[in-house]
Image (tube, rainbow, N blue to C red; front, side, top):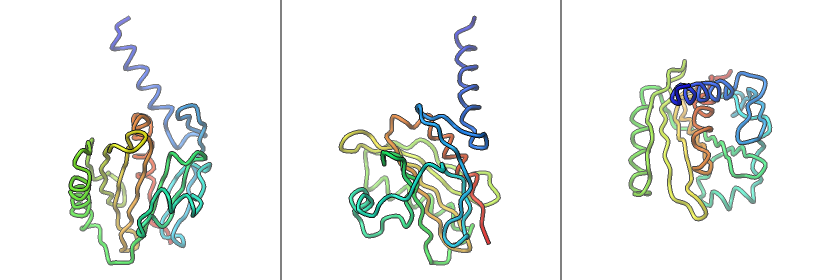
Length: 186
């Protein structure tokens, strides 16, 4: 059988198994169940792994030492995979999404000149979401990040995901689905 055809079938099967709408998703031998949660007093609805919990404050202070650390950090049991959220009070409209996304990319380029960028996009969602992903060297391994921005209740939602860069291939399509699950709440 044609080797390319076999690889294409394996890739399609892997992508289908990474659907967060299914009962569970297996990522690197871990079974995750995605559920819709509400954050920021029901302003934001989003699907994330139900197994992920709030990162303990003492861990958050070490992992995110800056005073502007994310307001909410959901983390895997071993704390290597993090999904973070901040909702800023400044007025922010959907028309600001592209400029903000580009601006944050430029900041990352200046702060981390060795960063490798993979994609930048405006996701086809009911809510306009700008996102980009990148890899940066870290102390023990390269770190993979996805940053995303949206207007929720006319406020800036800053979404961040990080994981070891070696896990990028499977996590990227999952996080794109997570971002596409974003809805504005009550």
